[in-house]
Length: 312
Image 1 (cartoon, rainbow, N blue to C red):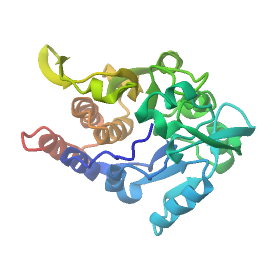
Image 2: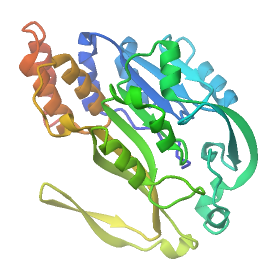
Image 3: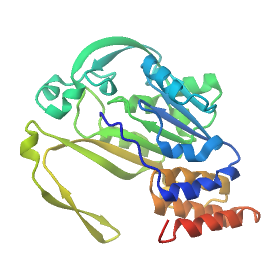
């Protein structure tokens, strides 16, 4: 939903990005629903990353092109993505970022004040293509990271990206646990689809709750999260859970399966460090260290030492 906040650059990401000079090729990052632009953290990789954003709003793409003027490896494509080719209605909403290929549920947008941003205000027609078709036509042979925020149509984008998914190492996806748009797929549908293709859920964040009486939900409720037996108390409030951010990684990354491909491990560590998953990134960098050529080992060692220092 409407959320223009981008992840902040962590010190750890800055440290790991210093290894980008050893990439044998650029990281390729695709952001579908790229309104407001890319997360600042990708700028750390400089000329070693290719950023590609999709948004069906031509005016927004032109605005973003202007913002990124002078960045040769940043591209914006004014197209909607799905699981087929053709024309599709795009349902326009009070907040443009909430516009969707699915029609908003008026019973929610009229009864829950903080979902009024998704109130239907119009309709237009957009060109729909698949990520695989676009990638094939433009010569993009490998994608490393995929971010999806398409207001309920994320599963369709994934269904049209079967070939791209073979090279993707991690995904960040906005998922709904309860529908905001009529007929939209939910988290369970996306989770099932990705698990069948070798991905596992790593983390759920930014869990968003709504209610018809926001003032009534403003009470403190004690909750906990548990990390390897460490109980971390958190302060929650009321309302029904509607959506959040889901992070997926390849199963072999999550379970630290052994590989001698130190370049893949280096890229994996870099990508995952941008997401803030320090333990997972560190494990992948350690595997890179174990198999890297002797002339690269000192650089990886330095990064690992700083990465796990108490001040990093």
